[in-house]
Amino acid sequence: MAIFALSPFALVGIWIWSISGPSRGIAVEQVDWLPQEATNISYYKSYIFTAYEFDISEKGFKKWVSNFDQVRVIEKPTTIARYSLAKDHYIDGADESNWIPDTESSYIKISKGYYSGHTDMDGGGHHVGYDSIKGRAYRQYNPR
Image 1: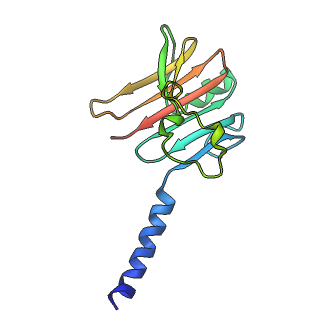
Image 2: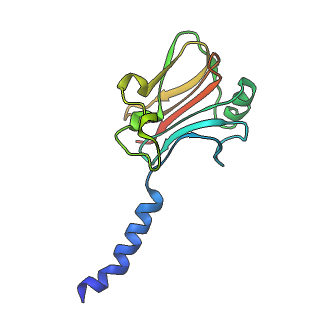
Image 3: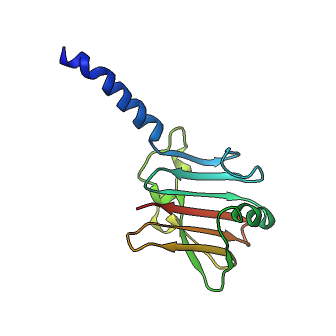
């Protein structure tokens, strides 16, 4: 009897876990949470770590980022964590040959473009940048 009494609670717990777990993708053409101009999107989104990157024009990046941040021109190379930092997690349906296997590829160094960000004392923070050479945007944040 106790097993049956716990079953509804277990099902609700499993359902909550399934909808709150991380979402992931590599080289996705479109997502509904980025501008329509964004393409070639790779991401890892969870409560404790979110990072994504995508191709977009410089004008499109400036318009998108103006909704939540003010960026500055990069004066010295800046590093941002990439979605692949969460590489220990399997990406459903992804060809593992697309996964970036080494630690050096878990961060992007931007030398020419735009950046804004901060790291809190507890390790949380946010970082957003645009690589003008590659035409690619990067964003990483976590709450802690």
